[in-house]
Length: 276
Image 1: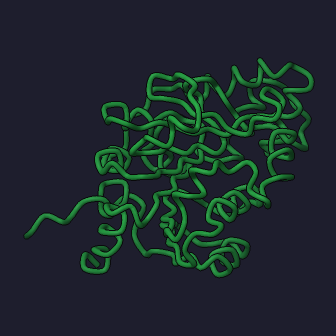
Image 2: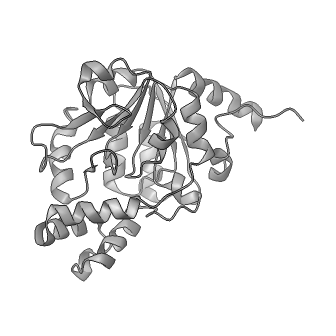
Image 3: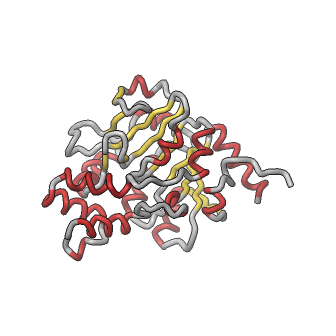
């Protein structure tokens, strides 16, 4: 197994393989934040009463709260849920220490950014809601939270890409039905994908960690972020696959790695094994 992992470690370290982190990374550490979209929907519904039929549908529940309780209330709940202090997983710290060109984090927490905070020359790009930033699909943020321009981002050694936003530094979130409809209307022609991301992904492989593809939203974002990259990718997925997941992996050329997620979180893919 260790010999099989060596090319993956080398690919990550060289920047040829791009880490793409999902909600399962924090869930596997036992962090007290919502672990997936249904759990997040239930957390929203526990704070604001929403119709029973949408209590397990995150984007619909978020839209209901936005419509009837205002966007500010919705953002406040998301920020509260993801502001719980969580230990930085060893995986995230290892990735930060490698000074990689690009890391993708598709969840609303701030943990990967915390891991990067002591590094030099990095920044984050976040998806933005059209309801709050009409005509602006994403924002560029320096480590201190200052909003900067694309030219400044071109100088970063490491880009943290957060397509759905994050609680920090400006509570940018894609959460409601309307947020995602706006993005999905344009994503096939890549308008919501920053040019720097399109450049950094060219001919690269993606390694999905803590991601599941059992809903259309996550499959669509993965597909569009991978567009025009390599035709080969990998994913660490624990547990049985749904029919939709199996089909997606096959269609997208994603090899499922038979490695326990716990081993990956402990550094199996980001550090060389210690000789016996």
